[in-house]
Image (cartoon, rainbow, N blue to C red):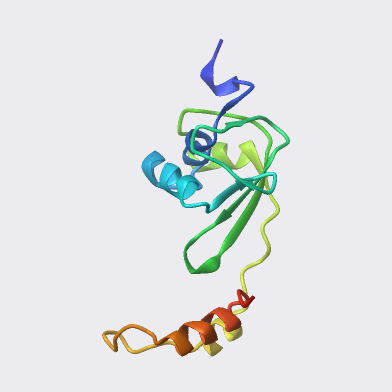
Length: 128
């Protein structure tokens, strides 16, 4: 039995193998931090995945990747082969005009105040 055609596998190994994370350690850390959700639920790195499941990854800067598992693999493969293992349902990135309108702080200007953080969250759509 080839490991490339395994019917199930670990979420941390699969996200690393299809190049959604640069290392398995970072994939596992993202799972533990709650940035990886399978079918709407946060999962530990050892969670078993099978074809048909939907994986939502919240990355740096609030970028969201939503993929549907087509094939489970555990060995890292090249980018052209990795793309065949999932269907990408991610929303398109925001236009450059929107990114340019987001306020930025000068490098080294210190930490944002609580008011600044609330405004940043509101602009990014994370306000409660």
